[in-house]
Length: 154
Image 1 (cartoon, rainbow, N blue to C red):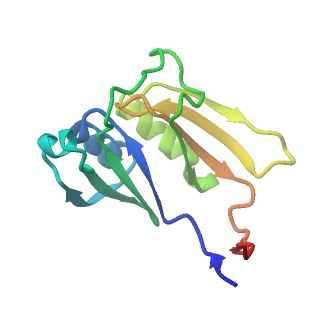
Image 2 (spheres, rainbow, N blue to C red):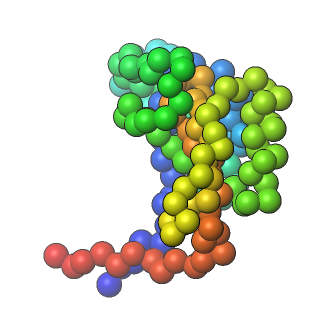
């Protein structure tokens, strides 16, 4: 029986790849590992135009959307709007990340406390330059080892 091991990667749509790369590198500490079809004409022809980024052990792609993305109001930091990504940090580094957001003039909401019986301790909410909702959180269960997911055979 096959088991899923973990989330491999995800995609985050942005309307300006260079601006988003700078944000994820300078503010969140990610690094660019690859660029694919980095030409807007490729996007018009339906090809995926993206930058692959690594943040800790997480691989994600910053991608140009095929259509215009809806933007949330400037003063809205939480929600889904189709675009929401949560990043975990250790409890020890949470306040340091908030200070980094302040140094880079990134407006945020929080920290917000979560219920004591849940896995999350606190979160802060903000947006990237593309209007995607982002969350930085520390987990009470950060040292817990999870079992792989078992797929039902069908």
